[in-house]
Amino acid sequence: MRWVALTAVAPVAWGTNYYVTHEFLPPDTPLYGAALRALPAGLVLLGLCRQRPRGAWWWRSALLGLLNVSVFFVLVYAASQLLPTSIASTVMAVSPLAMMLIAWPLVSERPGTAHLAGAAIGLGGVCLMLLTGTEGISVPGISASAAAVLVSSFGHILTKRWNTVGTDVLASTAWQLTAGGLFLLPVAAAVEGPPPALSPSALLAFGYVTLIATALAFAAWFSGLRHLPSGTVGLIGLLNPVTGVLLGTAVAGDVLTVQQLCGLALVLFGVVLGRPARTGRRGGNRIRPRPVPDERPARESSTCSPG
Image (cartoon, rainbow, N blue to C red; front, side, top):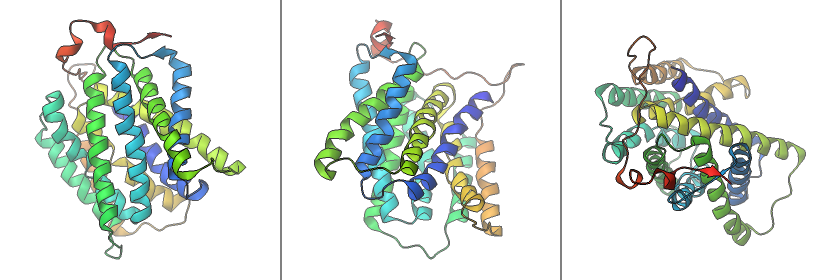
C-alpha cells in the first residue's frame, strides 16, 4: 500500500495545479508557462541525483521528455483554454483505459477484470461529478484533450518499460523534465517573444508548480509505474479531478451537490477496486517490468553514473 500512497501524491498535486495555474500564472504565455514549469523541476532533480544519462538513455530521455512534458503540457493547456474544466477533466479520465490497453502490448500487462471494472466505475463517477449538461463543446478542444490522453499514456508506459530495476527513477525523471523544458524554451522564445514579467505571487505559484506539482509529482508517478500494475496507477490518476472538485469546495466556496458526492464515492470505489492484491505476510507483491532485449547484454548502457 505504500506505493499506492506514494503514487497518489501525483494526481493530488496535479489536481491543485489547475487552481494555482488559473489563479496566479499568466494566461497568455502557455509555452513559457510549460517551460518554466518543466526545466527548473528537472534541474532541481538533477541537483539531487547528480547523475547523467548513459548510452540509450540519451535518446530515451529526449523522446520521453518530448512526449511526457513538451507535447503533453501544451496539449493540456490548449484543452484547458478551449473547454470547460469539467469537459477537459472528463476526457482525461479516459486515461486509465488508455494506459491499460497500451500496457498490454508494450509491457505484457493484460488488463484484469477488476482494473477494467474500476476504470469504468471511476469514469462514470467523474462524469457524475463534473457533467451538468450546460458545458459548451469545442471539437478542437476535445481533439487536444484526447491527444493529451494518448500522448501521456504512451509516454508513461514507455517510461515503465524502460525504467527497469537498474535505472534510477529520480534520475530518469530529471532527464525527462530537463529535456522537455529545453525543447520548449526556444519554441517559446520564437512564438511568444521575451519571457513574461512575473509578480511576486506568480513567482511563488511557479515555485509550487515546479517543486510540488511537477518535480515531486512526476517522481512519485514514475515510481508508482515501476512498482505497480499500469491499471492500478491509471486508476489512482482519477484522484486528479476529485482533488479539483474538493479544492473548489474548500477554497472557492463551491457547494458539493448530492450528484457530486455520489460521483466522488464511485471514483473512490473504482480506485479501491483496482488496487493490487495483497500477497504474503508483508503484503503487496512487487511488480517488476519484463526486461527488454536491448537491455540484457549491457546493463551499463541503460543505467546512470555520477556526472
